[in-house]
Image (tube, rainbow, N blue to C red):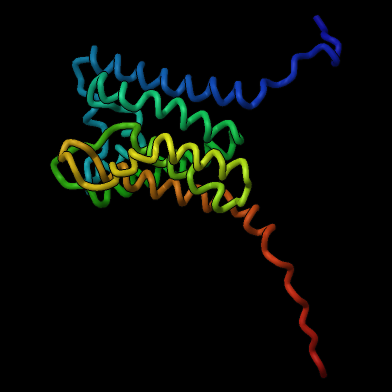
Amino acid sequence: MTVPDGSRPGPRPVWQRAALLIAGFVALLYGVEAVDAAAPADLDSAGIEPRTADGLWGVAFAPVLHADWAHLSANTIPLLVLGFLVLVSGIGRGLAATAIIWVVGGLGTWLTAGSGFVHIGASILVFGWLTYLITRGIFTRQSSQIVIGVIVLFVYGGILWGVLPSDPRVSWQGHLFGAVGGVLAAWLLSADERRRRRPPAVPTSSFG
């Protein structure tokens, strides 16, 4: 069967793709937690174990692992809201920001966190997405992104206290380096906008 070109459905709007992507990711987290709760093996042991060779693999797995349903539930709404806002401005850029946050947050935790604990949880992404959204507009100078950053700061800014040491059961290092990763991602991914704002070089004359 052939379909006339004019009747082919176009690509989904970016907001729909962003919503489906973040909803799918959160659904994956719930699936992983369900397996962890049902399986005899402890999946949480695959998290970040600081400064051990095996624990370095946890950088890849920690953000999809949670201690229990309450831990995952606490992260769910911020993940949905902040993840959607990161992705809706561009799927490719949002995924690139997420990758930077994932790696920087994980490696920072692996390098600096206290020994004897396994660090897990998507809060690395929550803190990274939060600081990415807050600082992105500062680097790009785009008014819409500045407005989003101000709103996000107003609604979720209070959780930034979580980058400071408090409860020993809370991985504040993951929060801190996730946040650092968010700022770094905003800086790196705004390079084109910052380059366009530079004044043109003034040619110099030479005299022979």
